[in-house]
Length: 81
Length: 153
Image 1 (tube, helix red, strand yellow):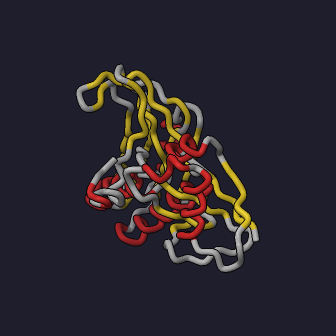
Image 2 (spheres, one colour):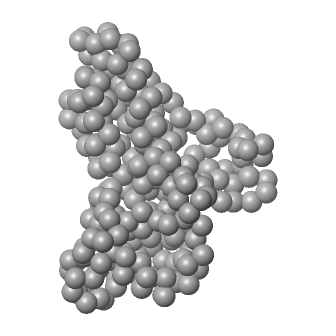
């Protein structure tokens, strides 16, 4: 199945892309997707924080199981306002 | 953009039109209107700020802002809530965010407005990149990250 990952702010710069598509096995978890991203973009391993995952525009847990077509984002520390 | 008669949520790439907001928030049932302006200041941690740029995960940011406004309506019985956040480059001295709250009495409007800006900073996926004389970096202020792995970015 395929999962679309969007990148913003610091993570966007470290990944060098605004989005990418991961092709993964069924029942892949958010946590596994993060590990895969780190393999693709090694600078992510050195982040001084653990990002917060969001699936389809809502906060999700690391154990969340992904579905085909999901939109996944790892949020770095926010600073709106 | 979400707009109904009790809530106005917007992300904009130009100067925030405060006059529009104050017209929208007006209601004869509201005895109090509190308006908060979050502005770009010219210094940060003792350094001169040269530029500030905001970026958002827009679909989620709008959904979260809508949620915050709904929560304020539930908790503080606000009559109207408007939240407008600017994205892209924001010059020094201009509004990055404006929150307007109307309620029957002042205490609810003050409380709701303060809670809205605090929660916005914590949970809404918006980020700012600050450029000072010494360089450029992503600011991290969300309290969701404090203490995690023992550091705040």
